[in-house]
Length: 313
Image: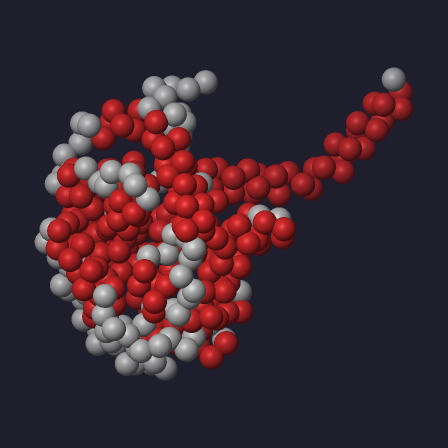
């Protein structure tokens, strides 16, 4: 039985101050309607943006030893786990801070092997800007309205604070240079994405490890080309250019844009708002599994008792 109105998220958002309640606004806009399918879809769409320069791809592939190469499903899940923590809890949360610090330590470890690749401050700033404005820009690209002003303000408040939790692994400096306004965020992204970059010789390996796990996890083999089209048709021009991909045709673009637009419209206008976040759903599922494992030693006695009852009835 529902304890809240069907569209309670919209009602709560209307009561919040984006300068003060930015963490709650981000949680409401990301954590509740998120699903495992959408989480993997977002990963496939977004991760290439962070490793479009060749030095980014090199550090995740690590000559075929990186997790993105050896275990791409685990790499996808690890990234998604961090994002769920950040979206749900916000930069002030100890859980988020522990999550980011684990990444800082991981980056510092690999920076010992690839010091130059981890020293580009613009990569860190762009990543935070991307997280702040990705959905706004995607909505505009598929023909929907972008973020309202309150969501734009909340995104800047949220991700500017997230940025200060990260360190440049090559220099040890706290990440700095995140723009003060949403307009500045978009301008930074335009600058970063429109730079002329050398050809990325790792592009084919990287893209395959974005598309294959998503397709294998959520689609039967016969529909893998459809899964790939749903991702490739969403990629913005700079990803197509930097990774040397064939330009998606009109049908591929239409399919991907229509699929995403339909999902967002249904979620925002028709589907009842969930009462708990995806992260909470995962925690409850883990608790059930733990409880089931704890009760397993009693299972043989229970089965034996049921058999005895059946035999005497």
